[in-house]
Length: 441
Image 1 (tube, rainbow, N blue to C red):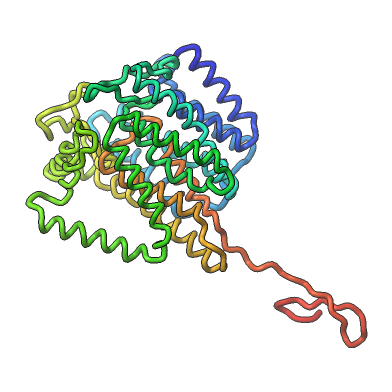
Image 2 (cartoon, one colour):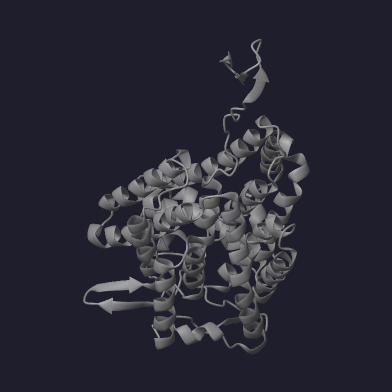
């Protein structure tokens, strides 16, 4: 960790601890994204990573200031807790229990820390708008840096340390900014597109700047995956007029997949292999990965596996035991087996359920459905679709759990109607109170 990164981290920790809630969220998100997850400093046998230090400071703040969750623990919160428990318990069935438990503990801390801290910091609809605005603002410098990186091959975030040189594909640089890979950098821009929509009415300038930053990140990454993720984001936003017919839309998607599976010679998920929007995509690998995971399901279904190198004829330079698991659902399976994968899918399902529940509550309250809620659901859909071809392994995961946390707020709460009192004249001419439920008193 460079001296500049240390100074930036210290300033961010002070901001998280000392400033008002929204500024604390700003510093947590800003430093958590700008500082690569590989940055750490050692103290004896322990490594302290920047993001986890920030989350530790945020937890300390919440405990000291007694800034609990905006609403009581609900279904999505409890599913997150169950997922965390499953991730830790699955460690007991791996070869090196100690090392696996340490790894899973870090994963659980980052996941639950990010989710519950933003649940604590985001307490109202205004806070959700503020979070979306913060995302737009912090993406602007990243987009500028990635554009410069794509033109020159110089990554300005390397001043913090922990960022490798950009790779070259098709004769051009693939910019990554502070992220672990160019695909993840572009994906962050793509899945953040729906978060710019709620700003359009009140903060149009910020919304436009955020949209331009998102598209610049997608372009600078030179990857097919982010382009598809952007398509999912925009398609989900444009489904707003059909929000009352989503059950029909979902069944149509299911029937389409079944039809493709019947028509195609290969399984329908091999449609992934045909997606190549840049001319240099490895989309075939993503389809073949699903097939080989199914073929070897007996090795990983119970609690995951420590060895997948034999699944493919080629491996990866950073691991002699594994292939490139470019699928977040399968990543959950390799880490913790089918139970962890299904619990992760349950997290997503619960998030979508809360979006629908919130919109129905707004209808029951005879108010217009909140487009903010729909935009959050569109962002969640973009993440869910992207997980089929990308596994988040760096700070990009913050954007996913930030989206879940804002959905978990449940923006539109059903409240009892206010008790209204009317002063009338009784038969004696003095004032009496007429209660709307119990009458005159």
